[in-house]
Length: 85
Length: 174
Image 1 (spheres, rainbow over the protein chains, first blue to last red):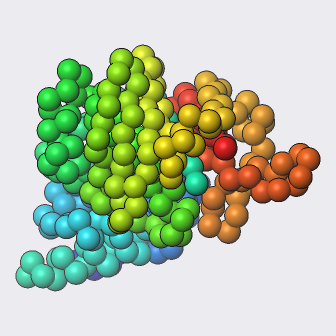
Image 2 (spheres, rainbow over the protein chains, first blue to last red):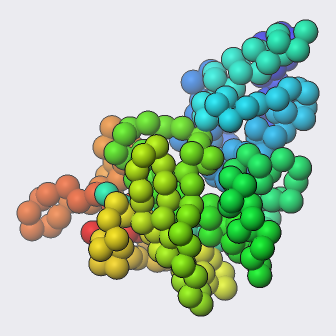
């Protein structure tokens, strides 16, 4: 899967939980889920579970701990997708 | 060091589906899951434990400057429930944090401190209007994003902990 496809899917997953639409429009690698998008930390787990479902991958606890921004989320997804093949 | 967390129960019911597959396992230890499933009101217990973890994490983050989404490394234990009040401890990476949780019809509010004595002497401001909360508590943030107030007399930086969710926001200071 190309990085652009991953970002597009990730944006669809994240959108329902975003509290700062402006930051969402400007989403880039450095966008922080909590600091920038103002996502409630209780909803970060929903994003993790949605990523698992939609990409059909598993995100372990160690990976979840780092799941704070777009860049890390993409690298975790890419790594898990590669391992699946 | 102090931390606090407020949960608007009406907002939580809209924003979170805690019954979804895998949800509990990602956030709560087996012991905590038992506390939830055995509670008279599992939903209330779930949010009580979450606010304990969040308020303890705020102290941990302030102490270590480490940011991490690590609910399973924050373990709630030694819960003492009396009516709408829960005293508990949270263990995290070798540290113990003391928490006090108030269960209200509309919200759950937890304060956390590094020592038991501090918990009862905290100044707590609770607002149902986020704007007036901000106006009455003009906080600044340091480079790590940690909020503080300036003491009017001594100009000393006083660390505060802020939380807002749904209709509510809370400010605590020592």
